[in-house]
Image 1 (cartoon, rainbow, N blue to C red):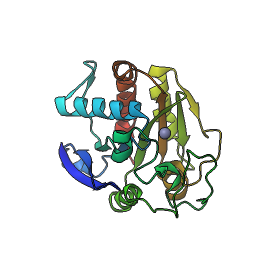
Image 2: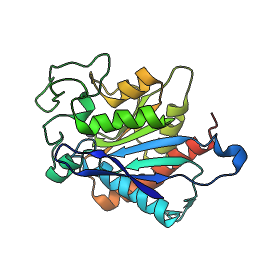
Image 3: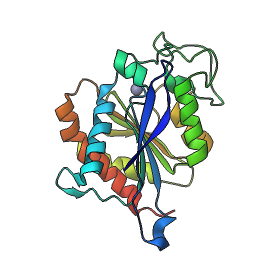
Length: 239
Ligand SMILES: [Zn+2]
């Protein structure tokens, strides 16, 4: 496990990233999938930050809830608090009041805020946290993205045509949690990561909505094994 500077927040704080890049046999090294796991895109959704840190603990300690091996044959880049300013202030938006999941430069980006909570920013990709995310995706080309949020419990999948990997990962998670799987979230979300990465860049993207308000110990108890089960599906999937 190594740490890296993912980016810098609007307030000038470091956004810390962690890399779990396991050594592998030379013949399979190139086929190890690279998964980007994001927490805290919305600063008032601490459940995703909690699950990110639980995953971090598992990867660092080498055990996963005692039942599964922590030796995941998968490259994982983990950003526990992408919107660190928002996490510290307990706000959905970043320090500029912008909803980072409405600010990505998608074809459908709109300057209109559908509600006061969903501020898209002065222009697409105006926010430093998203510039870091876009740079990461461009440079590192992850094969799969999991973004941890909280709301009504559900797994929102942005599948790439011809692939069912998102569905398979979601089914593995849902098999543990009982959460429902939704191909759309139910309302328009211009400038969101699912559209930016999933639909426009062919990177399967799973938005994992944890129950809002779940106690941290219950987030870990209910969702850590489930998340690892989803990652295990990716481990076994060769590109
Ligand atoms: Zn959210």
